[in-house]
Length: 393
Image 1 (tube, rainbow, N blue to C red):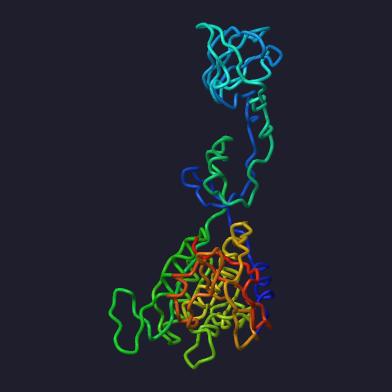
Image 2: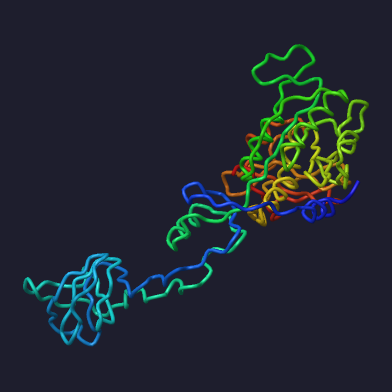
């Protein structure tokens, strides 16, 4: 059994970056950039009005101003502003030559159809200077960035209509166990429905990879071996749930080795999730995750998700929120780092949710996040600041 930190380093150091492809920007949401996006123009490309008003010279603010023209957004001014002159201008409009400020329309009074006076005491410039945000040639989105909604807008603003992105990992998913039936089936006595196959599919998709579910492999060498061969041939990553512990029917590690995977570890100092397997081959990677659904969730979140992002060239940084613990939290054994599901409380704190163990998937459906209890720690006092890792995204 190896420490969690060593397991994490081993996984991340094993990642091999995938190939790249071009995609239309309308299909690029949540993809990972494989090339910097640089600006093909200054932004703003000209001195731009920050609001509706009148462009004029600051030194003329005490005088009556003649309105020369109206400048809507997208219009190129035809007149230069000279002494005691101004131009009516809309937000986003190009500031005419000679003007050094824009006075808000609310701070003006119309004297005639073609003259106004400034009624305020003073004014800000209210001009966004040319290249105030970005200069031409600057990197606006760096390679490895995830194309979120704001970043899609940035890419579009700077002419990146077909971004170069990393190929999404193809992930083959196998559930294992004689006790499993699919969700549409009514489980007979001693059987349970397969939830892991489907939560892993959803988890893989949420990480930007492409999941393919291959079904349930039974706890026999023939069933497991055949499915591993099929999945390995068509995917970058194999994820199997169950069959990785120490029982007579836990055949997965041996069969992964038989199929050309070199297993780098088989047990991790983490709770839940100790029987976690990771292996590499020339063609693919493999994860053997524990069969209990909470263990599957936790090990995917902590180990598999960052790895899938690393294959695409992205560094995954999970969201953590510092919050005060609402009650004393204790545990009997502290031989492993533990992750506990928590909920936000009405007073702005956080509390551990009712949690019966690693088969209690209902706890996660109600939880807002998880907190970590380090190895060797048996108690955290009420009022302690804990760092909550969000799990509902």
